[in-house]
Image 1 (cartoon, rainbow, N blue to C red):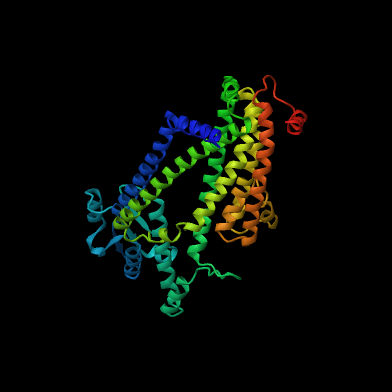
Image 2 (cartoon, rainbow, N blue to C red):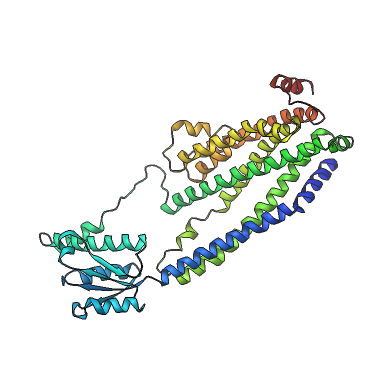
Length: 415
C-alpha cells in the first residue's frame, strides 16, 4: 500500500498544482456566480420595469376584470377613464410616466382584438399574459349572458388536469425533485466519468511516450502503479467536484433569498422542496465512485496499449459509446414513459450510473433493482480491473503499433 500511496500522492499533487486545474476549479464557480447574479439582476429588472401600464376601456364592461387579472399577475395597472383621451396617454408614454397602455373597444368584445401602445414592442411574456387575460375576460362576459357569472368563472378556472398516481403515493414535490435531481446527476456523472477517465488515459499515455514508466516500473509493480493513478485522479476529481458543490450550495443560499426579496410574487420557496436529500447525495456518490473506477480502469488499459494520441483517440471510441448510448436512453427514463426493457438495460454495469441513478431518485424502479445494479457494478469493477491490469502490465512497456484484439486476449491470458 505504501507504493500505491506514493503514486496516488504524486498524481494528486501534480494535478492539483497545474494551471488547468486551478483555472477550471476557480472559473466554474465564478461563472456560476456570474450567471446566477446576472439572472437575478435581469429578473429583478424585469420585475421592476414594464409593469406600470394604463388601461382605457371604451366598452365599459371589460376594464375592471382585465385590470384585476393583471394586478394578480404582479403588474401595476391604472384604469383610465375614456375622457382622458389617447393623446394624453401617448404623452405619458413618451415621457416615460408609464410603459404603455391597453385600449379595449367594441372590437375587443366581438373578436378579442385589442391595442397595446408603447415605445417598445412588448415581450413575449407580456404579450401572452395580455392576450390570455383579455380573451378570458371577454369569454366570461359573453358566456355570462346565457349562464350565471359564477358558473362561467368556475368553468374558466377549472381547466387544469388532475393527475392521480396508482400504487405508492408520491407528492408532486418529490416527483419534481426526483426528475430534476436525476437529470442533473446524469449530466454530472456523464461529464465526470468522461473527463476524469480521459485524465487517466492521458497520464498513462504521457508516461509511456516519455519512457518515464520504464524508470517508475522498476520501483512499483504495474498493478499498483495503475491503481495509484486511478486513485490519484479520482481524488483530484472528488476535490474538484466538492469545491464546485460547495460553491453551488453557497450561491444557492445567497441567491434564493435575494430573488425572494426582490420578486415577492414568485414562488421561489418551492426550490427548497426539490433539493436532493442526504440519501440521494449518498447514492450519487456511490454511483460516481463505482462508475469512475469502472471506466478509469478501461481508460488506463487503452492508454497502456496505445503509443500516440491518434491511436488513443481511435481506441477510446468504444468506451465513449458506452457512455453516449445510456446518456441518450436516459431521456426516456426521466418522465416514466420509457420502454420496459430500459429497466433491465439499466442493470448493465456500464449503463447503470447513467440509466439507473435517475430512475432510482425518481422512484421509477423497485429498490431491489437499484441494489442489484450496485452489486453488478461492484462485480464489474473487480472483473474490469483484473482484465485492465493484465493489459496494463504488458502494454505499458510495449512500443510500436497498437495491438490487435487477438493480441490483447493473449496478453490477458499470459500476463
